[in-house]
Image 1 (cartoon, rainbow, N blue to C red):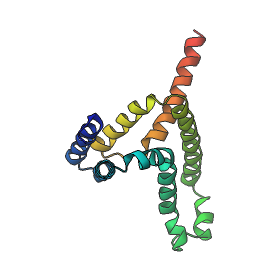
Image 2: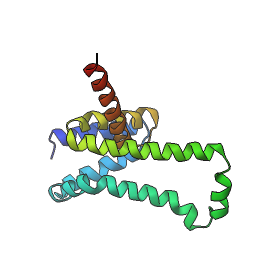
Image 3: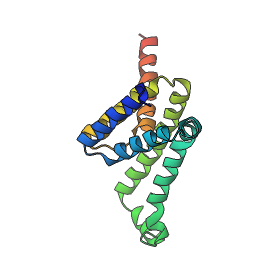
Length: 156
């Protein structure tokens, strides 16, 4: 039970506790629980493969709740397009989605980078009260920077 991965998870739990980050603590608690009940071999591959998709779906549902409750309707949509803030938000949404797509490509092509991205995300969550949606965006930003560095190295 107490192998390297479990000890690493316990360290992350402690960091989550110190940083008062409930998301990290719950995630670690669930993962250790799955290990304890010997469900890790069966469930970890499924969670690893589909977890990001599930998370994105849950976030999308949460964002769409105001539409479902009627709090936001077509009138609000029409009003928002009159605001330059809304156009900035629209462009940012498109940009972030495209960056996340590049992030998925990077993680698929270079899975060893996942460790650094996850550690960066954990550090931001624990120490700066960030939100753990960072691995995809972080991978996308890393992908863009890597391509830019490759471009400049190639042509210098």
